[in-house]
Amino acid sequence: MTGSEASPSFRLAYVPGVTPSKWVRIWNERMPGVPMALVPVSADEVYDVLRRGDADAGFVRLPVDGTDLSAIPLYTETTVVVVPKDHIVAAVEQVSGEDLADDIVLHPLDDPLDWERLPGRPALERPAATADAVELVAAGIGVVVVPQSLARLHHRKDLTYRTVTDAPESRVALAWPEERTTDLVEDFIGIVRGRTVNSTRGRSQTPPAAEQKDRGAAKSSPRKSDSGGGARRKPAPGKGGGRTAAKNTRGGGTGGPKGGAKRGKPRRSS
Image (cartoon, rainbow, N blue to C red; front, side, top):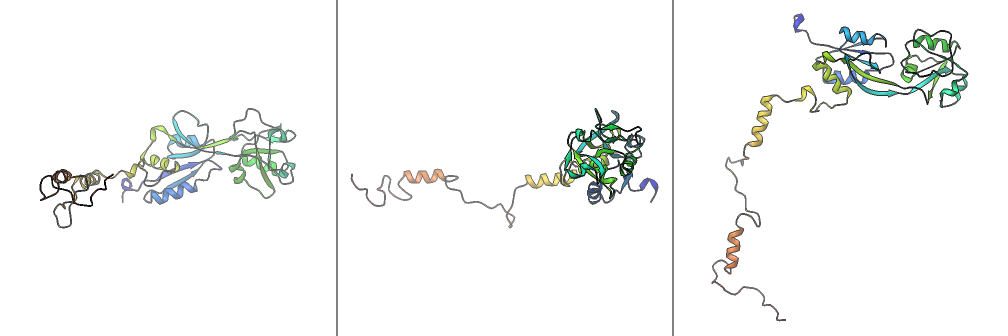
């Protein structure tokens, strides 16, 4: 097989915290001839990866950087605060920003949350990444507020997390370069949007023209009996023969004298 005849592949980028396994499984079931290559990238690098063509599509966090990329929002994540297990916050199910007023709240440079005002007290320096912020929390230096998927990704036995009710939320989307909306990209869009394999909107679901022609001919051709001739049906009551029956009734019955008396029991005089 030459290089030009090699099977196509689909490259899917994804940022930390996103788990694409569900969509990858469906892709492998529906597109067994097109292998999928996963490309893990940082949230800062994912847009450059898509623009360079190093990935066909990618899971990103909104808002999308630039107008040359198309995006489909998929879901919104819960926001949590990561704290040591012996922290007072660990004793409750959820907290608000005011409950963190006395804590140093770390603000990593790769924070995906769009804050108007960060709760708590600011740290002297911003950690370079969320992973670094979590290490500082484990060392007893402040807390960090992140999407729940990132808290799970950087899970440690000595840390826990709780929901923050009034914090910004992170939205995950599928993005791709608008000028490179290929057939494979359309196929993957159908998968993430939940279209079934028999969906009429799927690119590969339209039957060939010859098959459509055969189906149309089958619908338009008359049905025949097993003997090869058209079967004659008995007229339904009130249809096809109703005029003859009415004429015979007006004539007093078939073969009887015109105006002859009707058979049956005589009517009782009132």
